[in-house]
Image (tube, rainbow, N blue to C red):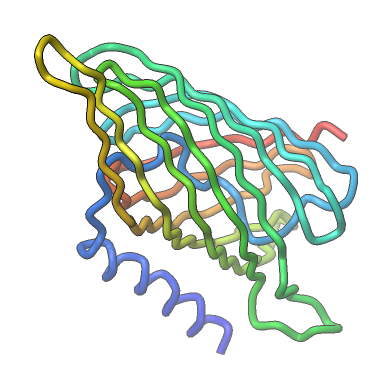
Length: 214
C-alpha cells in the first residue's frame, strides 16, 4: 500500500507537468520534505538550480514548534539575457500528517505558504501562494534514509514592467501552478543531499545540501 501511494504521487507529478504554464517560476525549488525540523532546531542549506534561469544561493530554516518551521532564502539568478539579479523569499510549513506508530499515517504531509521577490532587468516579479508537500521516508540497509517527496503549489505571480522611453509602466497578475518532485538522501545525521525536478515555468533540475547546525 505504501509503495502504491508513493508511486501514485510520483506519477501525478510527472503526468501533470505538461499542464503547468508558469510565467516566472521559482528560483529556489523546494528542497525540503514534509517533515518539520523540530522545535528550536536550525538548519543552513545551499543549492544550485539548473533551470531556465540558472540560480544558486542558500537558506536558513528554523523550527517554530514541533510541527511548524519557517525558512528564509536568498539567491543569485542569471536570466536569459545574461544579467545577474538578486532574489529572496520565505516559506513555512505545518506538518499535519506524521508517519509514526501513533498516527499510523501512510506518509508525511505538510501544508504551508510561500513568498518570492526578484528585481529583474525589466522590472520585478512578486509571487505569493500556498503549498502542499508529501514525503515517504525509507530506511536503507546502511542505516541512512532515502526520502522521495513531492510538492504542488498554487500562487499569484505579479510581473511589473518599468517604463521605457514613451512606453508606460505596466503590471500583470496570473494564478499559476507549480510541481516539484525529488529525493532527499540523509548521508549522515547532520548532512543531507537533494535532487529534484521542477515544473513551474522555470523548469529544470535543482540540487541542494542541508547542514543541521543546532
